[in-house]
Length: 263
Image: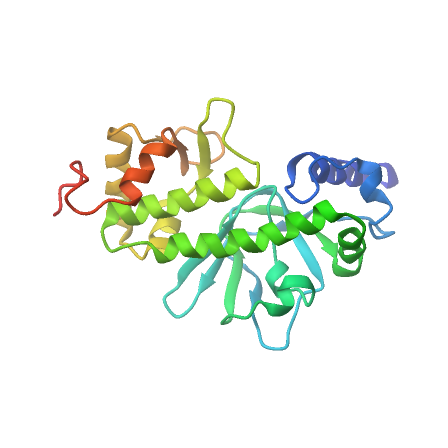
């Protein structure tokens, strides 16, 4: 049992240093001395169950969440039930609810945080993270970047118009920018691969789900994306084949997208 726990610890720390934006490039030794004596735990978050409510007045978290596998983890804003952030494996969430650093200045309305699909996470206690933060300037710079990316994601979402192709393209461009800056994507072929359901897109863009499905089919027909319905892990996998061409759709008006039938 002790050996199994030790192996799990090693696997988590190895993931942190090879796959997470905050700690990529560090050695495992760099982190071990800052971790809690009881180690880090791999926790399972079940789909469609609340993790916590962000931005509650006078309430803060005691740990930073890091996504190890699965997801995405979403933040829902009420009363429109609009999704305002998505976090995939290698990313972090909860930092805007920590009574620390930029989190102390981050104020918003209460929003539900939940795993859209089954997700595995680990939590770094705030006291331990503060020690890492104070010891490495690179972590401080990257941590600031996480807050910048949240703001820029919101900017893209605010630019979702009522014109369906432009709205969906705005979300896809937001995720392309986010995942590229986090150094998670694209792959060697320049393709971005996202587990992104039509339901999530509809709640982020405030569109009818059927409309989203039609936009995705149109984008696939134009060669912008590929809908990988035969993927082993999810039927919602989208391959973004031409990220640059999406810019034209993102900045389009009704007259510029010839493949969308509704004017």
